[in-house]
Length: 341
Image (cartoon, rainbow, N blue to C red):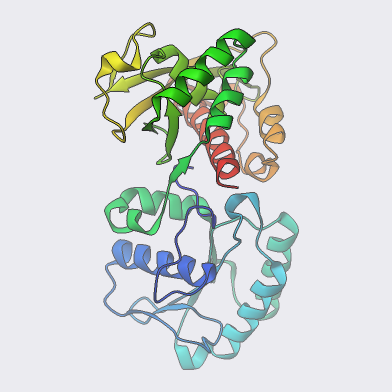
């Protein structure tokens, strides 16, 4: 996903006093923008099982969140309690459809329990909806100007973390020591954006180091693997290539940062291009292996599997690129949350 809805990045701004309220405020802002519904309202506690109500559409929304975002999960118990309370107050509130608005996923078991309870309460399947993080991700991208102030996506790497990144990039110790000395002497900090998420990483660096040095360090700090991935159901594969760009123009790897005339604090862009092939690659890991390595099995569970013959060339291309991008985004968000810890 392009956005991350965890407590690491979503701000709690007055009048909200906790993360749950901040999540509800974001949902309310997005629903107002998307539905253009003048009768949309937030209900103050006690909310009677409904956080947001649209009288014009006869729709009720209940917001549930986990501070870990998609790395966490939503409680079935709390959702069941809200559903029962909402059903007890359905006539007085006048809603016909009910939606859970979540920043994380339910487990399959939780969804089964909620659906069973809804049926017991005579709420039909088409009257109950689950609006998960992917839904809010699309709305936030569509209405970004209305929500970006609600997030803080800037992460700052320490000098120690940058040095560790060079070690992970397999630079010889003598080069790592040389780079460390130059960084300490330079007292230079600059920001780097990327084209796959809104994360901005600030790193201490030296203008005397090269673009390649910078790309190698940022790749490790953001957790981006250049290994290709096999999507075994479609028998396709994809892999990223990376560069450092200014106004989308790639800069030569041998250039010194000083030659780019970058002012301290001015963002450059870590550009990630995804290339695909209509075949698998020998010895490349599968999508499942990589998601399990990132401890994001819940994301993998939601990937629809295809038979190669179900799709034409263009469809295989687009689905492969979309999945590869989602994988890169997961890598970046996992790394960014660790940098925030």
